[in-house]
Image (cartoon, rainbow, N blue to C red; front, side, top):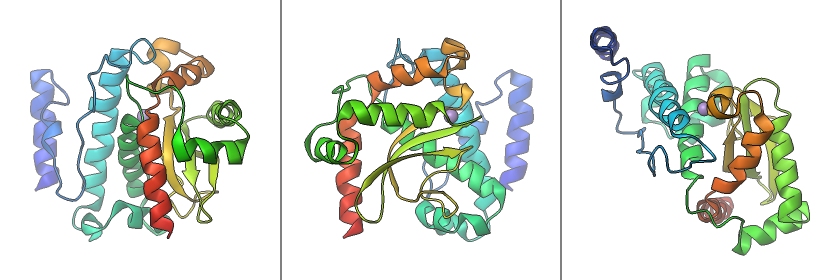
Length: 234
Ligand code: MN3
């Protein structure tokens, strides 16, 4: 029924010249498509409004819709997404790609803000200093993880099982919660380095986008995630 509705709405939306408007009606009780926590132009000049609008309302929405279609009727629709990721290697690629796309972008929007503190503080700052030497050194490691990811993917700051921070990068829509990730942990900060995240404004200059990203990090949110993740380990 859901697939039929989706097909009908796509056809209708296409006729109306609004390819995503009706597509946007799919919802789920377990997996929420969250509102963007700010306006599309809120992160200007670092991330332009058109990129934000396309990225959120089309890319993210498509991952979400495709994820719901992939889990609907499988039993997975009642699972916590973290548990799905913990066994992702045993599920179809559509769950991995779209579930990752849905989760990663939700985190990405939350860990950006126009009211950034500019740098980490509190317990997180201490942990960053302990692991990387300084915030500047962390910035370099994180930027390198994003810059050297071949093709499409993500850069991450995460917390491992031992309670230590680490930086990693994953291909496509994978993330550190997935059982097939090279380094597993709880994601605290996510940076999308797919071309769709920056190409309109920065074209091929991924390094410039990465430099700009530093200006919109929601450090308060990353700190909150860090403290929550520490508690989860106990
Ligand atoms: Mn993206």
